[in-house]
Image 1: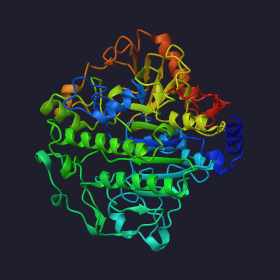
Image 2: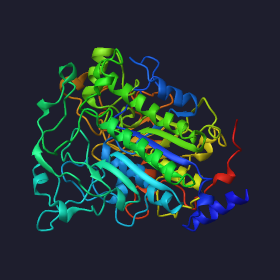
Image 3: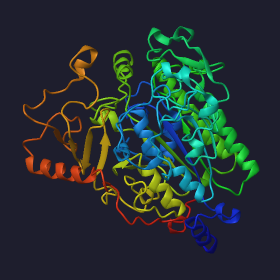
Image 4: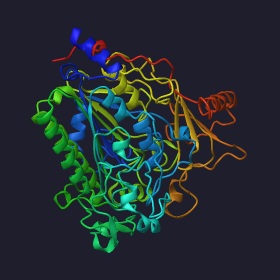
Length: 529
Protein backbone atom coordinates (compact mmCIF):
# COMPACT_ATOMS: atom_id res chain seq x y z
CA UNK A 1 0.00 0.00 0.00
CA UNK A 2 2.84 2.39 0.86
CA UNK A 3 4.49 1.67 -2.51
CA UNK A 4 1.21 2.32 -4.32
CA UNK A 5 0.80 5.70 -2.56
CA UNK A 6 4.34 6.63 -3.59
CA UNK A 7 3.50 5.63 -7.17
CA UNK A 8 0.51 7.93 -7.26
CA UNK A 9 2.32 10.82 -5.63
CA UNK A 10 5.22 10.67 -8.05
CA UNK A 11 2.87 10.29 -11.01
CA UNK A 12 0.74 13.29 -10.15
CA UNK A 13 3.91 15.32 -9.77
CA UNK A 14 4.97 14.23 -13.25
CA UNK A 15 7.94 12.26 -11.86
CA UNK A 16 8.83 8.59 -12.05
CA UNK A 17 10.93 6.14 -10.11
CA UNK A 18 11.54 2.66 -11.56
CA UNK A 19 10.56 0.82 -8.38
CA UNK A 20 7.26 2.70 -8.11
CA UNK A 21 6.28 2.54 -11.78
CA UNK A 22 6.43 -1.25 -11.95
CA UNK A 23 3.25 -1.37 -9.88
CA UNK A 24 1.26 0.31 -12.66
CA UNK A 25 -0.23 -1.92 -15.36
CA UNK A 26 0.69 -1.85 -19.02
CA UNK A 27 -2.04 -0.52 -21.31
CA UNK A 28 -2.62 -1.81 -24.84
CA UNK A 29 -5.20 -0.33 -27.22
CA UNK A 30 -6.07 -2.29 -30.37
CA UNK A 31 -7.94 0.14 -32.60
CA UNK A 32 -9.74 -1.41 -35.56
CA UNK A 33 -10.93 0.44 -38.65
CA UNK A 34 -14.47 0.37 -40.08
CA UNK A 35 -15.35 -2.62 -37.89
CA UNK A 36 -19.11 -2.65 -37.39
CA UNK A 37 -21.22 -3.54 -34.37
CA UNK A 38 -22.13 -6.87 -35.98
CA UNK A 39 -18.67 -7.83 -37.19
CA UNK A 40 -17.60 -9.96 -34.21
CA UNK A 41 -19.35 -13.21 -33.42
CA UNK A 42 -19.54 -12.26 -29.73
CA UNK A 43 -21.80 -9.39 -30.80
CA UNK A 44 -23.62 -11.16 -33.62
CA UNK A 45 -24.89 -14.71 -33.16
CA UNK A 46 -25.79 -14.78 -36.86
CA UNK A 47 -22.33 -13.72 -38.04
CA UNK A 48 -21.16 -15.53 -41.17
CA UNK A 49 -17.86 -16.43 -39.48
CA UNK A 50 -16.40 -16.75 -36.02
CA UNK A 51 -13.91 -14.51 -34.23
CA UNK A 52 -12.64 -16.94 -31.58
CA UNK A 53 -9.84 -14.85 -30.07
CA UNK A 54 -11.93 -11.72 -29.68
CA UNK A 55 -14.83 -13.81 -28.38
CA UNK A 56 -12.45 -15.27 -25.84
CA UNK A 57 -11.23 -11.79 -24.93
CA UNK A 58 -14.85 -10.77 -24.30
CA UNK A 59 -15.45 -13.90 -22.21
CA UNK A 60 -12.36 -13.13 -20.12
CA UNK A 61 -13.30 -9.48 -19.60
CA UNK A 62 -16.13 -7.05 -20.24
CA UNK A 63 -18.13 -6.35 -23.38
CA UNK A 64 -19.89 -3.02 -23.93
CA UNK A 65 -23.11 -3.19 -25.96
CA UNK A 66 -23.78 0.57 -26.05
CA UNK A 67 -20.33 1.90 -26.97
CA UNK A 68 -19.76 4.52 -29.67
CA UNK A 69 -17.09 6.16 -31.76
CA UNK A 70 -16.80 9.95 -31.44
CA UNK A 71 -17.34 10.35 -35.18
CA UNK A 72 -18.53 8.27 -38.09
CA UNK A 73 -15.27 8.69 -40.04
CA UNK A 74 -11.59 7.96 -39.38
CA UNK A 75 -9.66 11.11 -38.51
CA UNK A 76 -12.08 12.77 -36.06
CA UNK A 77 -12.49 9.50 -34.17
CA UNK A 78 -8.73 9.13 -33.86
CA UNK A 79 -8.57 12.64 -32.50
CA UNK A 80 -11.10 11.51 -29.90
CA UNK A 81 -8.94 8.55 -28.89
CA UNK A 82 -5.78 10.60 -28.43
CA UNK A 83 -7.37 13.76 -26.98
CA UNK A 84 -10.49 12.59 -25.14
CA UNK A 85 -12.47 15.21 -27.05
CA UNK A 86 -14.94 15.62 -29.89
CA UNK A 87 -13.47 17.13 -33.05
CA UNK A 88 -15.79 20.13 -32.69
CA UNK A 89 -13.47 21.32 -29.90
CA UNK A 90 -10.78 22.04 -32.49
CA UNK A 91 -12.88 24.67 -34.25
CA UNK A 92 -12.11 22.88 -37.52
CA UNK A 93 -14.38 21.00 -39.87
CA UNK A 94 -14.72 17.25 -39.67
CA UNK A 95 -12.60 15.63 -42.37
CA UNK A 96 -10.67 12.48 -43.22
CA UNK A 97 -7.21 13.59 -44.31
CA UNK A 98 -5.80 12.61 -47.70
CA UNK A 99 -2.44 13.24 -49.32
CA UNK A 100 -0.25 15.61 -47.28
CA UNK A 101 -3.32 16.87 -45.43
CA UNK A 102 -3.03 18.67 -42.11
CA UNK A 103 -1.97 20.17 -39.83
CA UNK A 104 -2.72 17.78 -37.00
CA UNK A 105 -6.00 17.99 -35.14
CA UNK A 106 -3.79 17.59 -32.04
CA UNK A 107 -2.68 21.16 -31.40
CA UNK A 108 0.78 22.06 -30.06
CA UNK A 109 0.81 21.77 -26.29
CA UNK A 110 -2.40 19.77 -26.12
CA UNK A 111 -2.15 16.96 -23.60
CA UNK A 112 -2.61 13.61 -25.31
CA UNK A 113 -3.22 10.26 -23.65
CA UNK A 114 0.31 9.26 -24.62
CA UNK A 115 1.90 12.33 -23.06
CA UNK A 116 -0.21 11.90 -19.92
CA UNK A 117 1.04 8.35 -19.52
CA UNK A 118 4.61 9.37 -20.28
CA UNK A 119 4.37 11.80 -17.36
CA UNK A 120 3.39 8.81 -15.24
CA UNK A 121 6.56 6.97 -16.21
CA UNK A 122 5.29 4.93 -19.16
CA UNK A 123 7.17 4.06 -22.34
CA UNK A 124 4.74 4.88 -25.14
CA UNK A 125 4.46 3.56 -28.70
CA UNK A 126 2.07 3.55 -31.65
CA UNK A 127 2.13 1.34 -34.73
CA UNK A 128 -0.20 1.53 -37.71
CA UNK A 129 -2.56 4.12 -39.06
CA UNK A 130 -2.09 7.65 -37.63
CA UNK A 131 -4.48 9.79 -39.71
CA UNK A 132 -5.02 12.84 -37.54
CA UNK A 133 -3.30 15.22 -39.96
CA UNK A 134 0.35 16.20 -40.43
CA UNK A 135 2.30 19.25 -41.51
CA UNK A 136 4.23 18.79 -44.77
CA UNK A 137 6.30 21.56 -46.38
CA UNK A 138 7.41 22.25 -49.94
CA UNK A 139 10.91 23.45 -50.95
CA UNK A 140 9.98 27.03 -50.02
CA UNK A 141 8.88 26.00 -46.55
CA UNK A 142 5.22 26.53 -47.38
CA UNK A 143 2.70 24.15 -45.79
CA UNK A 144 1.04 21.89 -48.32
CA UNK A 145 -2.66 21.20 -48.41
CA UNK A 146 -4.34 17.87 -48.96
CA UNK A 147 -4.85 16.22 -52.29
CA UNK A 148 -2.84 13.65 -54.15
CA UNK A 149 -0.89 15.97 -56.49
CA UNK A 150 0.78 17.79 -53.62
CA UNK A 151 2.54 14.58 -52.57
CA UNK A 152 5.26 15.22 -55.16
CA UNK A 153 5.89 18.71 -53.78
CA UNK A 154 6.97 17.55 -50.33
CA UNK A 155 10.46 18.54 -49.26
CA UNK A 156 11.29 15.78 -46.80
CA UNK A 157 14.34 17.51 -45.36
CA UNK A 158 12.30 20.57 -44.49
CA UNK A 159 9.30 18.55 -43.31
CA UNK A 160 11.03 16.12 -40.98
CA UNK A 161 11.26 15.47 -38.12
CA UNK A 162 7.51 16.09 -38.35
CA UNK A 163 6.46 18.87 -36.02
CA UNK A 164 3.12 17.22 -35.30
CA UNK A 165 3.84 13.52 -35.75
CA UNK A 166 3.35 10.93 -33.01
CA UNK A 167 6.74 11.62 -31.43
CA UNK A 168 5.77 15.28 -31.06
CA UNK A 169 2.50 14.26 -29.40
CA UNK A 170 3.69 12.03 -26.58
CA UNK A 171 4.89 8.81 -28.19
CA UNK A 172 8.43 7.60 -27.57
CA UNK A 173 8.36 5.17 -30.48
CA UNK A 174 6.25 5.16 -33.62
CA UNK A 175 5.95 3.50 -36.99
CA UNK A 176 2.89 4.82 -38.80
CA UNK A 177 1.34 5.78 -42.11
CA UNK A 178 0.05 9.34 -42.51
CA UNK A 179 -3.38 8.27 -43.79
CA UNK A 180 -5.28 5.04 -44.44
CA UNK A 181 -2.42 2.63 -45.20
CA UNK A 182 -3.94 1.11 -48.34
CA UNK A 183 -6.51 3.69 -49.42
CA UNK A 184 -5.22 7.24 -49.35
CA UNK A 185 -1.86 8.32 -50.73
CA UNK A 186 0.60 9.53 -49.47
CA UNK A 187 1.92 5.92 -49.26
CA UNK A 188 5.00 6.25 -47.05
CA UNK A 189 6.11 5.02 -43.64
CA UNK A 190 6.95 7.44 -40.87
CA UNK A 191 9.35 6.11 -38.26
CA UNK A 192 9.89 8.26 -35.18
CA UNK A 193 9.03 11.42 -37.10
CA UNK A 194 11.22 10.66 -40.10
CA UNK A 195 10.46 9.24 -43.56
CA UNK A 196 13.08 6.59 -44.33
CA UNK A 197 11.97 6.23 -47.95
CA UNK A 198 10.17 9.16 -49.67
CA UNK A 199 7.36 8.68 -52.17
CA UNK A 200 8.87 8.77 -55.63
CA UNK A 201 6.81 6.41 -57.77
CA UNK A 202 3.23 5.95 -58.87
CA UNK A 203 1.15 3.20 -57.33
CA UNK A 204 -1.18 1.32 -59.68
CA UNK A 205 -4.08 -0.58 -58.15
CA UNK A 206 -3.82 -3.23 -60.84
CA UNK A 207 -0.61 -4.40 -59.16
CA UNK A 208 -2.69 -5.64 -56.21
CA UNK A 209 -4.81 -8.78 -55.90
CA UNK A 210 -8.56 -8.36 -56.32
CA UNK A 211 -10.27 -11.06 -54.24
CA UNK A 212 -13.75 -11.84 -55.47
CA UNK A 213 -13.32 -9.38 -58.31
CA UNK A 214 -14.50 -6.40 -56.25
CA UNK A 215 -12.81 -6.18 -52.86
CA UNK A 216 -9.94 -4.05 -54.19
CA UNK A 217 -12.44 -1.17 -54.33
CA UNK A 218 -11.27 2.14 -52.85
CA UNK A 219 -7.56 1.65 -53.37
CA UNK A 220 -6.59 5.07 -54.70
CA UNK A 221 -3.71 5.45 -57.09
CA UNK A 222 -1.09 7.94 -56.02
CA UNK A 223 2.50 8.39 -54.95
CA UNK A 224 4.29 5.75 -52.92
CA UNK A 225 7.67 4.82 -51.53
CA UNK A 226 9.75 1.97 -52.86
CA UNK A 227 9.05 -1.21 -50.89
CA UNK A 228 5.68 -0.01 -49.58
CA UNK A 229 3.48 -2.96 -48.58
CA UNK A 230 -0.27 -3.19 -49.09
CA UNK A 231 -1.44 -6.78 -48.67
CA UNK A 232 0.22 -7.63 -45.34
CA UNK A 233 0.48 -4.17 -43.81
CA UNK A 234 -1.31 -5.16 -40.58
CA UNK A 235 0.93 -8.17 -40.13
CA UNK A 236 3.88 -5.78 -40.27
CA UNK A 237 2.28 -3.40 -37.75
CA UNK A 238 1.57 -6.31 -35.42
CA UNK A 239 5.12 -7.63 -35.78
CA UNK A 240 6.46 -4.23 -34.78
CA UNK A 241 4.11 -4.01 -31.81
CA UNK A 242 5.24 -7.41 -30.57
CA UNK A 243 8.89 -6.50 -31.12
CA UNK A 244 8.37 -3.33 -29.08
CA UNK A 245 6.81 -5.19 -26.14
CA UNK A 246 9.49 -7.87 -26.20
CA UNK A 247 12.41 -5.46 -26.42
CA UNK A 248 10.95 -3.17 -23.78
CA UNK A 249 10.52 -6.02 -21.32
CA UNK A 250 14.13 -7.04 -21.85
CA UNK A 251 15.45 -3.50 -21.56
CA UNK A 252 13.28 -2.03 -18.80
CA UNK A 253 11.07 -4.64 -17.12
CA UNK A 254 10.38 -2.25 -14.24
CA UNK A 255 8.77 0.34 -16.52
CA UNK A 256 5.14 0.06 -17.69
CA UNK A 257 4.32 0.62 -21.34
CA UNK A 258 1.45 2.07 -23.37
CA UNK A 259 0.93 0.66 -26.83
CA UNK A 260 -1.53 1.54 -29.60
CA UNK A 261 -1.89 -0.93 -32.46
CA UNK A 262 -3.97 0.92 -35.06
CA UNK A 263 -4.97 -1.47 -37.81
CA UNK A 264 -6.10 -1.04 -41.40
CA UNK A 265 -8.60 -3.88 -41.00
CA UNK A 266 -11.29 -3.75 -42.08
CA UNK A 267 -11.08 -0.52 -44.10
CA UNK A 268 -11.28 -0.77 -47.88
CA UNK A 269 -9.63 -2.22 -49.87
CA UNK A 270 -10.08 -5.72 -48.46
CA UNK A 271 -6.68 -7.37 -48.84
CA UNK A 272 -6.24 -10.26 -46.40
CA UNK A 273 -2.77 -11.75 -46.24
CA UNK A 274 -2.20 -14.94 -48.26
CA UNK A 275 -2.18 -17.08 -45.11
CA UNK A 276 -5.66 -15.83 -44.21
CA UNK A 277 -7.37 -16.36 -47.55
CA UNK A 278 -10.09 -18.97 -47.21
CA UNK A 279 -9.93 -18.94 -43.39
CA UNK A 280 -13.70 -18.42 -43.34
CA UNK A 281 -16.63 -19.21 -45.59
CA UNK A 282 -17.56 -15.53 -45.75
CA UNK A 283 -15.33 -14.35 -48.57
CA UNK A 284 -12.47 -11.88 -48.48
CA UNK A 285 -13.95 -9.60 -45.86
CA UNK A 286 -14.73 -12.49 -43.56
CA UNK A 287 -11.11 -13.58 -43.96
CA UNK A 288 -9.99 -10.00 -43.29
CA UNK A 289 -11.85 -9.85 -39.98
CA UNK A 290 -10.47 -13.28 -39.05
CA UNK A 291 -7.00 -11.87 -39.71
CA UNK A 292 -7.73 -9.07 -37.24
CA UNK A 293 -8.94 -11.68 -34.77
CA UNK A 294 -5.76 -13.71 -35.08
CA UNK A 295 -3.50 -10.66 -34.85
CA UNK A 296 -5.28 -9.72 -31.63
CA UNK A 297 -4.60 -13.25 -30.45
CA UNK A 298 -0.91 -12.81 -31.23
CA UNK A 299 -0.79 -9.71 -29.03
CA UNK A 300 -2.53 -11.50 -26.17
CA UNK A 301 -0.27 -14.54 -26.53
CA UNK A 302 2.78 -12.28 -26.40
CA UNK A 303 1.61 -10.74 -23.14
CA UNK A 304 1.24 -14.23 -21.70
CA UNK A 305 4.65 -15.38 -22.94
CA UNK A 306 6.28 -12.29 -21.42
CA UNK A 307 4.64 -13.04 -18.08
CA UNK A 308 2.70 -9.77 -17.97
CA UNK A 309 -0.77 -10.94 -18.97
CA UNK A 310 -2.29 -10.24 -15.55
CA UNK A 311 -0.63 -6.83 -15.35
CA UNK A 312 -1.90 -5.49 -18.68
CA UNK A 313 -5.16 -3.76 -19.50
CA UNK A 314 -6.11 -4.49 -23.11
CA UNK A 315 -8.79 -2.40 -24.81
CA UNK A 316 -10.29 -3.25 -28.20
CA UNK A 317 -12.34 -0.66 -30.09
CA UNK A 318 -13.28 0.57 -33.58
CA UNK A 319 -13.27 4.03 -35.13
CA UNK A 320 -16.74 3.90 -36.75
CA UNK A 321 -19.27 1.60 -38.37
CA UNK A 322 -18.85 -0.57 -41.48
CA UNK A 323 -18.22 0.81 -44.96
CA UNK A 324 -21.27 1.10 -47.23
CA UNK A 325 -20.39 -1.30 -50.04
CA UNK A 326 -18.86 -3.71 -47.55
CA UNK A 327 -22.12 -3.79 -45.63
CA UNK A 328 -24.20 -4.26 -48.76
CA UNK A 329 -21.98 -6.97 -50.25
CA UNK A 330 -21.76 -8.92 -46.99
CA UNK A 331 -25.55 -8.82 -46.63
CA UNK A 332 -26.08 -9.92 -50.21
CA UNK A 333 -23.32 -12.51 -50.55
CA UNK A 334 -23.02 -14.00 -47.07
CA UNK A 335 -26.15 -13.03 -45.13
CA UNK A 336 -23.87 -11.19 -42.73
CA UNK A 337 -24.93 -7.86 -41.25
CA UNK A 338 -21.81 -5.90 -40.36
CA UNK A 339 -23.99 -3.23 -38.74
CA UNK A 340 -25.55 -5.79 -36.41
CA UNK A 341 -29.16 -4.97 -37.27
CA UNK A 342 -28.71 -1.25 -36.71
CA UNK A 343 -29.81 1.47 -39.10
CA UNK A 344 -27.01 3.21 -40.97
CA UNK A 345 -23.37 2.57 -41.82
CA UNK A 346 -20.07 4.43 -41.81
CA UNK A 347 -20.57 8.24 -42.15
CA UNK A 348 -24.17 8.11 -40.83
CA UNK A 349 -25.50 9.60 -37.63
CA UNK A 350 -27.80 6.62 -37.20
CA UNK A 351 -26.59 3.93 -34.81
CA UNK A 352 -24.92 1.77 -37.46
CA UNK A 353 -22.50 4.61 -38.16
CA UNK A 354 -21.07 4.93 -34.65
CA UNK A 355 -22.14 2.08 -32.36
CA UNK A 356 -19.07 -0.15 -32.29
CA UNK A 357 -17.49 -3.09 -30.46
CA UNK A 358 -15.67 -2.23 -27.24
CA UNK A 359 -13.95 -4.91 -25.16
CA UNK A 360 -11.71 -4.65 -22.11
CA UNK A 361 -9.61 -7.39 -20.52
CA UNK A 362 -7.39 -7.32 -17.42
CA UNK A 363 -7.15 -10.72 -15.74
CA UNK A 364 -7.67 -10.62 -12.01
CA UNK A 365 -8.95 -7.04 -12.10
CA UNK A 366 -11.84 -7.04 -14.61
CA UNK A 367 -14.37 -9.73 -13.66
CA UNK A 368 -14.71 -12.22 -16.50
CA UNK A 369 -17.76 -12.72 -18.65
CA UNK A 370 -19.48 -9.41 -18.01
CA UNK A 371 -21.72 -7.56 -20.46
CA UNK A 372 -22.56 -3.94 -19.70
CA UNK A 373 -25.21 -1.57 -21.04
CA UNK A 374 -23.31 1.49 -19.79
CA UNK A 375 -23.16 4.22 -22.41
CA UNK A 376 -19.55 4.63 -23.52
CA UNK A 377 -17.45 6.46 -26.08
CA UNK A 378 -13.91 6.07 -27.40
CA UNK A 379 -13.14 9.44 -25.81
CA UNK A 380 -13.63 7.77 -22.41
CA UNK A 381 -10.45 5.74 -22.78
CA UNK A 382 -8.43 8.84 -21.83
CA UNK A 383 -10.11 9.55 -18.48
CA UNK A 384 -10.38 5.85 -17.67
CA UNK A 385 -6.66 5.26 -18.08
CA UNK A 386 -5.84 8.52 -16.27
CA UNK A 387 -7.96 7.37 -13.35
CA UNK A 388 -6.17 4.03 -13.30
CA UNK A 389 -2.68 5.55 -13.15
CA UNK A 390 -3.61 8.27 -10.67
CA UNK A 391 -3.38 11.29 -12.96
CA UNK A 392 -5.75 14.13 -12.06
CA UNK A 393 -7.03 15.62 -15.31
CA UNK A 394 -7.28 19.42 -15.45
CA UNK A 395 -10.73 20.62 -16.43
CA UNK A 396 -9.53 21.91 -19.80
CA UNK A 397 -8.15 18.50 -20.81
CA UNK A 398 -10.17 15.65 -22.35
CA UNK A 399 -13.41 17.57 -21.96
CA UNK A 400 -15.52 14.76 -23.44
CA UNK A 401 -13.96 11.90 -21.46
CA UNK A 402 -15.71 10.04 -18.65
CA UNK A 403 -14.06 7.63 -16.23
CA UNK A 404 -15.28 4.09 -16.95
CA UNK A 405 -12.82 2.45 -14.54
CA UNK A 406 -15.51 1.75 -11.90
CA UNK A 407 -17.50 -0.09 -14.58
CA UNK A 408 -14.51 -2.11 -15.75
CA UNK A 409 -13.57 -3.43 -12.32
CA UNK A 410 -17.13 -4.02 -11.11
CA UNK A 411 -17.45 -1.07 -8.72
CA UNK A 412 -20.43 0.51 -10.52
CA UNK A 413 -23.56 -1.27 -11.73
CA UNK A 414 -25.45 -0.57 -14.93
CA UNK A 415 -28.39 0.95 -13.05
CA UNK A 416 -26.00 3.75 -12.02
CA UNK A 417 -24.98 5.32 -15.36
CA UNK A 418 -21.57 6.95 -15.67
CA UNK A 419 -22.68 9.11 -18.57
CA UNK A 420 -25.77 11.34 -18.34
CA UNK A 421 -25.33 12.20 -22.02
CA UNK A 422 -23.07 11.65 -25.02
CA UNK A 423 -22.18 13.47 -28.23
CA UNK A 424 -21.31 11.93 -31.56
CA UNK A 425 -20.68 13.63 -34.91
CA UNK A 426 -21.51 12.32 -38.37
CA UNK A 427 -19.57 12.73 -41.61
CA UNK A 428 -20.50 16.40 -42.09
CA UNK A 429 -19.83 17.22 -38.46
CA UNK A 430 -23.53 17.29 -37.54
CA UNK A 431 -24.39 16.32 -33.98
CA UNK A 432 -26.21 13.46 -32.38
CA UNK A 433 -27.03 13.58 -28.66
CA UNK A 434 -27.85 10.66 -26.40
CA UNK A 435 -29.56 11.11 -23.05
CA UNK A 436 -30.52 7.82 -21.49
CA UNK A 437 -32.33 5.83 -24.16
CA UNK A 438 -33.31 8.99 -26.04
CA UNK A 439 -31.40 10.10 -29.10
CA UNK A 440 -31.69 13.44 -30.85
CA UNK A 441 -30.14 14.03 -34.29
CA UNK A 442 -29.69 17.72 -35.10
CA UNK A 443 -30.23 17.07 -38.79
CA UNK A 444 -32.53 15.31 -41.20
CA UNK A 445 -31.47 12.20 -43.05
CA UNK A 446 -28.41 10.13 -42.27
CA UNK A 447 -25.92 12.93 -41.73
CA UNK A 448 -23.60 11.08 -44.06
CA UNK A 449 -24.56 8.79 -46.93
CA UNK A 450 -27.20 9.38 -49.56
CA UNK A 451 -30.07 6.92 -49.50
CA UNK A 452 -32.01 8.23 -52.47
CA UNK A 453 -30.20 6.34 -55.19
CA UNK A 454 -28.47 3.13 -56.20
CA UNK A 455 -28.02 0.18 -53.90
CA UNK A 456 -28.47 2.40 -50.83
CA UNK A 457 -32.17 3.02 -51.55
CA UNK A 458 -33.18 -0.32 -50.08
CA UNK A 459 -31.85 0.81 -46.69
CA UNK A 460 -33.41 4.29 -46.70
CA UNK A 461 -35.93 3.48 -43.96
CA UNK A 462 -39.17 5.37 -43.36
CA UNK A 463 -39.90 8.62 -45.14
CA UNK A 464 -38.90 11.74 -43.19
CA UNK A 465 -41.53 13.69 -41.31
CA UNK A 466 -42.67 16.74 -43.27
CA UNK A 467 -41.38 19.99 -41.77
CA UNK A 468 -39.23 18.27 -39.13
CA UNK A 469 -35.74 19.74 -38.74
CA UNK A 470 -34.26 16.84 -36.84
CA UNK A 471 -34.93 13.38 -35.49
CA UNK A 472 -35.85 12.07 -32.05
CA UNK A 473 -35.91 8.37 -31.21
CA UNK A 474 -36.42 6.29 -28.09
CA UNK A 475 -33.87 3.53 -28.60
CA UNK A 476 -35.36 1.48 -25.76
CA UNK A 477 -38.52 0.82 -27.77
CA UNK A 478 -37.20 1.66 -31.24
CA UNK A 479 -33.57 0.53 -31.62
CA UNK A 480 -33.91 0.65 -35.41
CA UNK A 481 -34.63 4.41 -35.36
CA UNK A 482 -37.82 4.07 -37.41
CA UNK A 483 -40.31 6.26 -35.52
CA UNK A 484 -39.34 9.93 -35.43
CA UNK A 485 -40.93 11.50 -32.33
CA UNK A 486 -39.75 15.01 -33.19
CA UNK A 487 -43.25 16.49 -32.87
CA UNK A 488 -44.87 13.89 -30.64
CA UNK A 489 -42.27 14.42 -27.90
CA UNK A 490 -41.79 18.14 -28.49
CA UNK A 491 -41.00 19.00 -24.85
CA UNK A 492 -38.26 16.41 -24.64
CA UNK A 493 -36.89 17.47 -28.00
CA UNK A 494 -36.70 21.13 -26.92
CA UNK A 495 -34.87 20.15 -23.73
CA UNK A 496 -32.38 18.07 -25.66
CA UNK A 497 -31.86 20.84 -28.20
CA UNK A 498 -31.09 23.22 -25.32
CA UNK A 499 -28.67 20.71 -23.78
CA UNK A 500 -26.96 20.23 -27.14
CA UNK A 501 -26.45 23.98 -27.47
CA UNK A 502 -24.86 24.07 -24.02
CA UNK A 503 -22.59 21.07 -24.58
CA UNK A 504 -21.29 22.35 -27.92
CA UNK A 505 -20.57 25.95 -26.99
CA UNK A 506 -17.48 27.25 -28.82
CA UNK A 507 -16.04 28.59 -25.56
CA UNK A 508 -16.23 26.30 -22.57
CA UNK A 509 -18.31 23.57 -24.16
CA UNK A 510 -17.83 20.13 -22.60
CA UNK A 511 -19.70 16.95 -21.77
CA UNK A 512 -17.46 15.50 -19.05
CA UNK A 513 -17.75 16.68 -15.45
CA UNK A 514 -15.28 19.10 -13.92
CA UNK A 515 -13.18 18.23 -10.91
CA UNK A 516 -12.54 14.64 -11.96
CA UNK A 517 -10.59 12.70 -9.34
CA UNK A 518 -8.60 9.59 -10.22
CA UNK A 519 -9.25 6.35 -8.40
CA UNK A 520 -5.70 5.04 -8.72
CA UNK A 521 -4.48 1.50 -8.40
CA UNK A 522 -4.78 1.59 -4.62
CA UNK A 523 -8.49 2.39 -4.87
CA UNK A 524 -9.37 -0.73 -6.88
CA UNK A 525 -10.67 -4.01 -5.50
CA UNK A 526 -7.98 -6.59 -4.82
CA UNK A 527 -6.90 -8.98 -7.52
CA UNK A 528 -9.27 -11.87 -8.16
CA UNK A 529 -7.63 -15.25 -8.44
